[in-house]
Structures are given as C-alpha cells and as structure tokens.
Length: 607
Image (cartoon, rainbow, N blue to C red; front, side, top):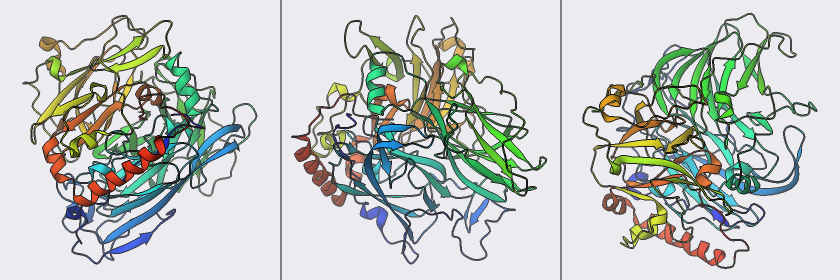
C-alpha cells in the first residue's frame, strides 16, 4: 500500500444471505448508532442478567450455552456509519504533528460497535481516502453464512475504490470484546481501527462494565514508511503507547493521561484489547489483581493473576475489585523478552486508575515491574463451554506442518521476505480467491498460499514451527485465524529470550506435552521464538479463512496462509445477493485500479 497514494478502496461486504436475514420471531427494529455511549445490554424488564447473576442472559441462554450452535433470537439491527478520511499535518494525542494520518469519523480511534448477543449488525463504510482502498475486518467474528463480509481484500472481496462505500452485514453470534481494522496492506497502522463490544453472559458477577480499553503502539512515521523500512531492516521501537486513544509525550509532557474511574467497593469489568501493529504488552495495575473471565471471544472460568501478557490482536476481559485504599493507581505497560516482541521510546507507558471520591493527581507509587512473560501467553485457561480434542492420534507430517521462515536476500530489495509453508502470500486485489470459487476456476495461483481443507466437521491439526536453524530471525509471532477459534494443544517448552535452544516438534517426546482436555481456545496465540505451536480447529464453517501473523510488517511481508475450507459447501452457501454485490464491487474496483497512480507494494494484506 502507498499511503499518500496507494491503491484502493473499501472492501466489499456482501448483502446478508436471505437464509440469515430471514425475519426472526421478534418484531424487527433498526437502531441508528453513530457512537453508542450506553454499553449496557438492552434486555427486557425482569431479565435474569443482573449484577449478581451475570451468568444468566435470557430464557434458555446462559454462560453454558454453546454459542457456536445456537444464537438468541433478536429483532434488533444495530446500524453504524464509518467514514474514512485523510488528514495532513495532524497533531496527535501526544502533541506531535504527523504528516499524514487516516481517521475514522474524524478520530484516531473509531467508534465502538456495540450490540447484544444475537443482534444483527450493519456497518456502512464510506471511503473518502484520497488514493487508498480499504477493507474492514471484524476481528474474531466467525461470519458463519456471511463469509463474504469477513473484510479480507484479495480473499473474500475486492477492495472498494476511493469514493465508494459498502455496508457490511453480519450477526453477533458470539459475545465479548474485539475490534475492527483495515485489512488493506498495513493501513490500520495509519489509524483505521476501532473496537467491538457485544454484551452477553459472563463467568463472574460484576457491578460495573467499564467498557473497552484498547492499547496500541503509536508511530510518528506512516505505516507505509514503516513497511518499507522493515522490508529492509529491523523493526523500529514505537514512539509512544496510547491508552484508549490518549497518551502523554514522555519528554514534553504534551497530551493527557487516560483515566479510568473505579467505584470503591465495587467489582468492575474491563475489556482490554491490543490493537497494535507490532508491540506486545505486559500489563499490571499497582496493588490490584486481574481476574480473567474471557480470552479473545471465548468465556473462561475465572483465573486471577498479578499481570497479563497481551499479544497483538489479543483481548482479555478481566474483573478488577476496587478494594484498596481510595486514591490513584498506575496502570503500567512494560516490555519483556529482551524486546523481542516490541519496545517503545516511551520508557514508562501508563494510564491512571482513579477511585471515585479520592483527590485527583498523579499516583505516587510507581509499582514494580511484573515477572517477565518472555513473550508467551497463557495456555492454562479453561473455557466455560468445553471442547475435547483427541491428541494421541496426532502425527507430524509435511501436510500438517507450517514452517515459518525469514528469507534473507543480500543486495536486493526487499531484503527480508516472510514465508510460511514455503512461500510468501501475495494476493491479487483484482481477482480474490472468491472470484475463482464463483467461476469454478480451480487454477489458484501458488502465491495465494492456499491450504485446502475438505473434511466435514472434523478436527484439523496444524503444527506451526519457527524454521530458522540459526535462531537469528526466530521471533515470537502472534498467529490469528479468521472464521474460527482454535484450540491450543501445546507448544514448545517456555524459555527466556534470547536463547540458543531451538525446539522442533519431536513425535516421541512432545506428544506427552499435548493437552486435548478442554484446552484454551482463542483466535490469536503466540508462536514461541525458536519453538513450535500446535493448534486445531473444527471444519464446521466453510469459507476462505486467512491465518497470519498479526504483526503488521510480517503479514505485509508475506507471513500468511489461506485455508480454503470445504470449497463446494462454501460456494453453495453464497446467495444470489452476495454474488451480485461481490461482482458489482469488483467491477468498480477494477475500473478504478486500471488507472491507479501507484502500484501494489506488498502482500496486499494487513493483519
């Protein structure tokens, strides 16, 4: 993507298939919501979902309901409009002027999409960018029967040309906390990002929902410049870290602290989201603990910890008890693993948590740095709705192994190309995977990095290995799967970074490291440096689903595969309205792209 001049437009969302949009057994009502400040669920009087009983949702639906199988009826459609624009010489949250940014509804952080479990969601995206297309991915949402609304240009849609618009339509079949972002090259690093909050049951009671709390790395260079830099050199540190769109400059003091208010004696729910392009975070709140109740969009049994590691794209819903002496407390970000998973020029990124009724001002206790998580995430969480997966029959084979490799080409540009499964992905905006599918053309280009998955309702296993014998480029990678949650069956032994130990999956030894008894389930998990990660997902959602590293520079550099799951079933599930909308959007895109001022400069994808 070229920032001032890139290419393209807003990714096509298709019209909701008629089988999904059939009128529910409730009177339909549309709710226009530009920004919904009221995040409380809109439940009927007498609902069982109360502060003392968050596990209950409505008659027949609670925390134990398998949300992948059934969805509460809803007569409500939540409608939003996202308008994308470019600004020059824009002064950011910490007082530094940036030459160019991209904004959503005039802000560096787009509005929160708020809905209740079972609601229908419509988001009109208006692309007023100068020379860039875009597509919006609704991170973590499975898009069952709405596959063409996944927002992955070059896969499920063509980008929409500048001046175009499209309305994405899908259903809140899951609940919890997530985010949306551009999937057009590295564009979301320029500011095309926002959050998602879907109300539903919870595994712990709580009094107050504090809402979403996105944390992101922040750079003064454009994402386009950073893509070029990282194709030919190491990734730079972030210039700052923003908390819910706010930040203080570490030298000038410009900007403002993000401030969260706690009510003494109450339990609060906080929805923490890492919307970064490269930085992973270690999080701690001085003199307080976090109790995790959801990992990505998967409710888990309560787990209390002193600190959290949050990889790029990951989310944790936590509860915080306001049980300490009323005052002001630092919410701190630190970096672990000897900066192998990111670092910042701001040495002490932080926000302030303030007890209501206490005097204002800065906290006086800086706290202590948490235990170094070494760029590894939790794998000992237990989902409330269980999945048990056979592991003793897993056998490592070339067909189920995905090696990750950094190709180094001295004297060439790009100097670095990220590969997985032997090649770097390179999508064609003009001819997405779905175009081949709809025209019954099976001559898919090898550069699409397609992995065909044809079994029906079967567990499919994938061993991801950091394939670098020297270990120089064997970095931690946050792998994200579209269209599914996956179970994490195991990973290589944890170790401090840097290390000289390299772990390759050993069938006779490592089979005993695997756990298929209700393992953690999520949509982003960390591949360890110099190690391996074994995941599995069930083939119950036909579609074309990317799985990629969520570091912007890595997927832009090619680090992605595309699972084409049950192609024939996928084709048969695409309704006439979606087909027509897909073709119409691609025609508009091709017309614009034929005279676009700048060429495509990377894989075409952004996390």
